[in-house]
Image (cartoon, rainbow, N blue to C red; front, side, top):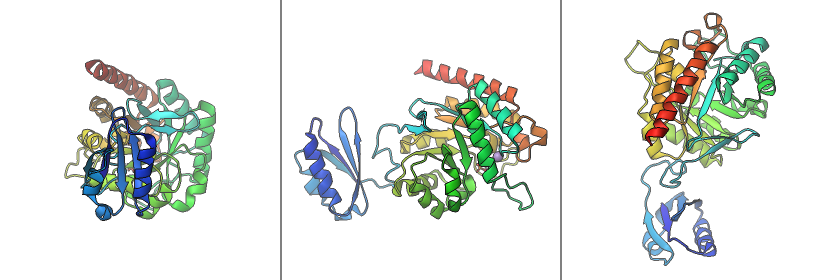
Length: 338
Ligand code: PEP
Ligand code: MN
């Protein structure tokens, strides 16, 4: 349920209303806008008397929210959320564009430091790199694990770039203490126990859409994290599985405007896993920027043919520089259009 409070209502009256709602075992989410205050009510709202609330002199209107996602719903929080990352409070969302780049997996100190330096020079705002890798085959490289996180932290000290890395098991959380953004990969999007544990942290969570999941299911996964108390979420469209075989997945770019309509959370795009082919990354990155994505996550490797994971879709640093420039041009053109 959403309660729209009349403009210029005194704060103590709003507080009283919130207290009364919360005394009935319900949670509230307050969003203060320029023209009105919105109180989102979460929980079993069937016990609330809608007519009674509508009749209050401070209430402009009451709406039932039919969607099962509440905290993530734009109706609860009409303004775009801006997620702050790391000690530098790097912003993501509402016009703040995240350009995340780095290798699929951290392989060595030399590799991660050299990639970190080159992506930073090209304009990346965060460094990605997998330390725990979800691989289809148990015989494939599984990542450097805790050592991989140590190497990412070293790259962060060298370059100042906040780091993004994937978690696969909540038991590993202590290793992620100094990680700036925790990634939930496509394969774990519906690992609800993991999501609940991440909800207990205050770390920004980058959650990727599952291989065969709907937009609503992605929002319900975000809702799991938010329902446990962590509202710092960035959504990621990374392509879904279809009958098409020319690309690794099919990039559903329409998810960007759809998500922007349904939720206040920032939405970024991963053109690397979406296409699986390095030469398709640039056009899809430009398209993502053109349709309003709040950022990109792109795989970059210093030596793609010898990468231990996802070499075919990884860009060389100079190719990434070219993509970053093209994306800036698209964004500038889109802003001029506005
Ligand atoms: C990754 O980002 O390296 C990754 C494994 O991505 P996804 O979960 O989207 O497949
Ligand atoms: Mn990868």
